[in-house]
Image (cartoon, rainbow, N blue to C red):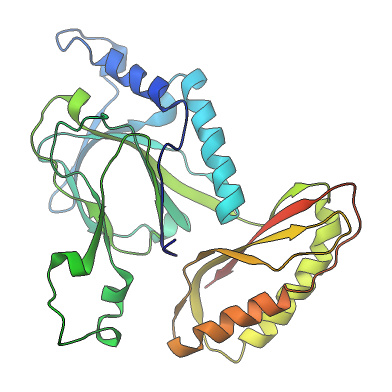
Length: 299
């Protein structure tokens, strides 16, 4: 797994239901009805060109809520984010694109869920991200290596039922769509941000039983971090706790830490300090096992 990017294929078993709603509303191009008049053509010169609408106003609850529940569960279990921003639904026909930009104020993680046709009738439409090494270019530079576009960017195609989650601080965009003016053949995506990072607990333990041990462990880590300079990003870990209360070694799930005024070479030491602080936790006994997803924000 790349620490700044997830790609989850076959993400939601109800993706076909959402797709059918869209196809049915555009089935007859000569027919006018309320569901056809909710779209905003969003054009900002040299930045954004796409057609969008709030997903919660467009899809019936019966089709949309199972997807949002699935997405929210994934965000809690993997990222430690307790909520989602209101999702957008956007389609991209010929000429639509997004130039490079970043979304830092919206949430610590962005997502794009593709409902594009299974057989793509267009070219382009990939999610485009600058590679992290480009943002620290000279540290990874080698004059013995050819550098062309694929060296600098990552492209993720809008495959049907594919979830793409990424660090929104990284400059990203959408490559120009070419080849169709039919919305039913367009790049179609639901997109937004994971928000409200906080500890997420599943299992037999109660929040009041895990708060103090976690606070003490994070305090130890914060003390160790004080000598390592300033860092920015999110580091989320999963802690599995047996019924006996004994915690297993923590597992890093998401890691977007970057040095602000710290020595990048101390990154391994920073992460080792965290795993050390969380590595010998003891919680109260319970009737069964528990899992804690703990996100730590660095600002």
